Image 1 (tube, rainbow, N blue to C red):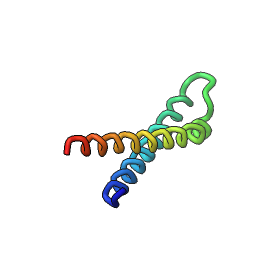
Image 2: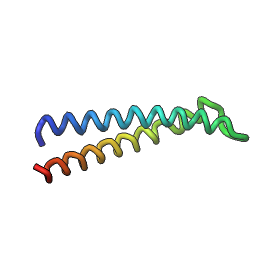
Image 3: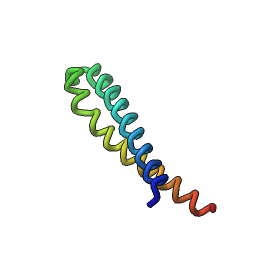
Image 4: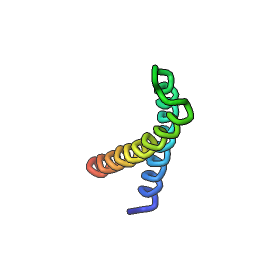
Length: 74
């Protein structure tokens, strides 16, 4: 694996984790609004890291597929 591919995969994984964490915070806020929902800080604490992990894996997988498709074309 070349440095260029490693950097692309790292960037995609990092951005996926950041966007996933932001979505998890939003999800926690919305979950706390509903009747019998948890308090805001508990809802955020319980959800942000799940979405950060899934976003990291999704970003890595999407970029890996993109790199694989580029290799097939060239």
